[in-house]
Length: 116
Length: 117
Image (cartoon, each protein chain N blue to C red):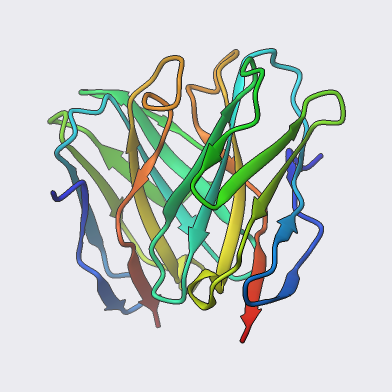
């Protein structure tokens, strides 16, 4: 009953450090997404993937990179963290097509990241 | 221009009463989906309800219903018989299928709902 699992749940980085956030889903979904949530701004799309081996930029991609080497995993990397990247990061996955079941995006529990 | 607008930063409701959370959207696509998610203080995003643009009937999921008015481009969430556990942030979101959208969700800024006993 795992759904979408994100690791880690919390992380504190110093400016300039790098890290990778891992997202894993067990629902065989084609589509996976990374969002960030900042106070008063809702969720904004960072990068997304429509299938294994494919990635694309979302609304706020600068400073992030992603990879999807396996269908079930979607990694978000910060090469040189900046204080502006302090945020809560959510991974989501979905199927694609018509109807309710194929359109629901399921979210992980989030990663709270602080960059000092 | 904002694609999803939630004009109510905060709403209050008495326990057991109904409440409506407003959402308007903007799209030129004919095919799209509208969603509501709940985010309690614990932080997770919980799916509540989905409405497809071609669905003729308003969606319902238990105590949640979506008042879909296509011509007005509105997708208001109605919560009936509010409970204390409904206190949370609520997000309206839209999934578009045209062009290069690739089905990504666009979120509104959210409405904080507080249920009073």
